[in-house]
Length: 118
Image (cartoon, rainbow, N blue to C red; front, side, top):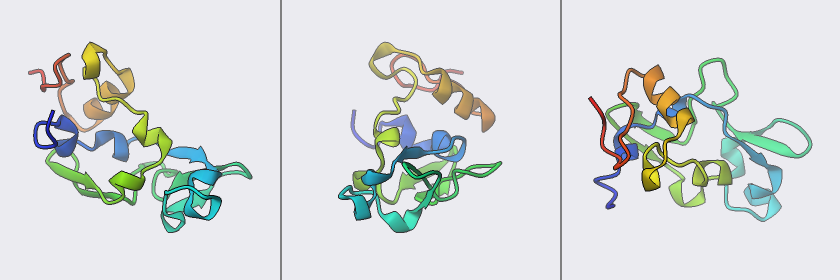
């Protein structure tokens, strides 16, 4: 699937619905790739992306309008939590968290082939 066909490029609901927490060493100061200036501490061992530990979360690295056109400003350096989050329908498997995030923004769930269901 090319980037243009990827429904995540027009969604971004997961980035504006959940806290993105990860092990502190994924930050640049711990030898990882996630820019530390875009993170905040949660505990001695955990960090999160700025903006995601709020009542109405939205990752500070997300640009664009959810449900229209979005992009991650640190896509190549995103944390493992983001790398491991599969969109619903990817490889024919549903993802209830993806479906919940999309529903929160009034977006239809994705079908097993990744297309938006009506």
